[in-house]
Image 1 (cartoon, rainbow, N blue to C red):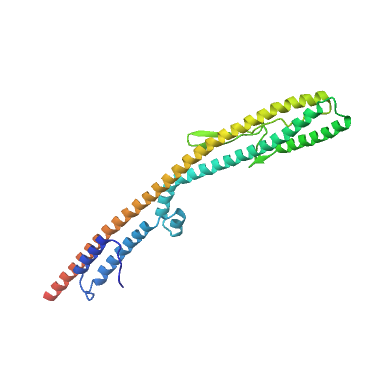
Image 2 (image 1 turned 60 degrees about the horizontal axis):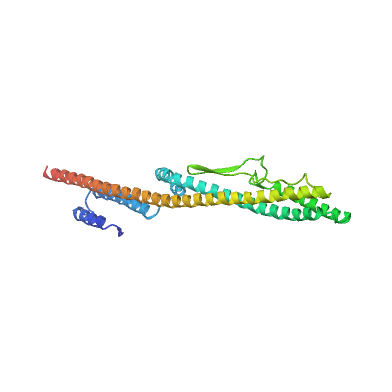
Length: 283
């Protein structure tokens, strides 16, 4: 069987060893063959490790607990960064849902403001006011539905509910519920009521615009943190690959030393056997 080598230094070492090795008919040839074969097996195993970066799962599946522990230690920081990035992505999704919800709220309130403006006129008939009141009340119900929207158990708009926050490096990013008045206390059943409702709606429209501006600012902060984490993640992955390559290189060097050591030992054993045979012949 022909053995192929990927390292030129190893080729020369093997040729030198082959020159010293006795013929297969030697009585202790099996000792030398076994020692050399085991050393070469260790060397090729180390070389194979340098050709592929093992994940923790592969290492465990192959029963190499030492390599698994090594990979786990090196990759733990990258795993932590990945969790941070996932949390930031969830926060972005929360902000996107908040902003989309506020856009709908703005549209509903804008229509309610137009209704209130019309209903505040003394010139409309009672029939027209009844129609306007019915539409206004239906839009109030729509606002109540929007106010109850949630994302992963967190309420998007109720001020009394918990905020959503994540750690991003050395600081915390927080999304507060973007509260608004659902106008349940207002109506357009009369001219004065419609005027009060109209004034309140104008204030709420300004508040919603401010809320959306805050969401945009926090979202930009999240995106900057995400870019920073991505840079960290790429750098750490490269560092992990280099560390495992260095580890594999050290293993190859150790296997080479073991090869030379076992070769020397086997040759000494063989020489001792030759000397004993010579003594026996002389006796």
